[in-house]
Length: 303
Image 1 (cartoon, rainbow, N blue to C red):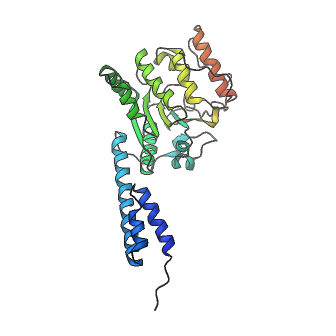
Image 2: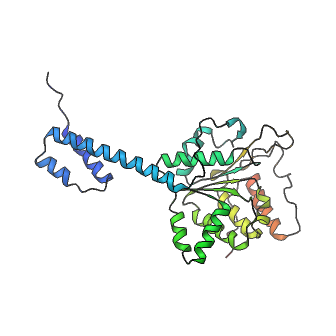
Image 3: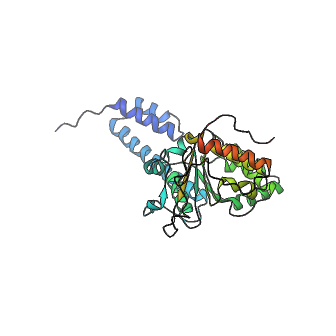
């Protein structure tokens, strides 16, 4: 029985594509055209495919190692019933990491022990497995690292290394107070990531209290501006729910332009100290986000 005729032109195109992917010259392809048989071309194609697959696996393993996850987590067995998503973000989109490709940010907000870090880590692991460079830090850990780099004269080099990532995960945001210089370093990360990469932030602190955590209300307003700019098209807040909480204390779902626990966001008074002008300024910003998702006239970061 005669073997089916092989399209050598198509095979050579595949060989050429693999050579480019592996950063090799096209010399092998030229030799195939001049001297190679069909069997030799088929063998070369298998070798190149095997090498490309091996390099991809090595790259994924390196990304997982470099990411710095405290533990390895996946979405298998994750209790989605404890998680309420905004209407603009489906569970499938979340797992697929579509927001990373679109340079969108994800803020996971809720009480301690509700699975925020688990979800953030699992999404980061999935990103690494898709060949997306990812880095994981707690907010305090990142401040310490950047402060040490500044003291050693290597701040710009350290920032450049961190910002190579396409996805940055900042865990425990606002869990411990940060001094003004630490807040400036974190703002540098937020500002330099704006529309260049995606951020996942886990926090148990609502926006209205960021000013007290970062010791500078204007700095907090500028961080919120960078995270939430473009309204609901660029920003998702996801709230984890603890089954043990009473209905009166459960965290609600708040997407841009939505209400909180069924109450109008515009009627909610999240501000504990309304005497400071900068706090009022923050309230006006958040009012725009929660009521309209408007993009207009958001203040820029302080110079």
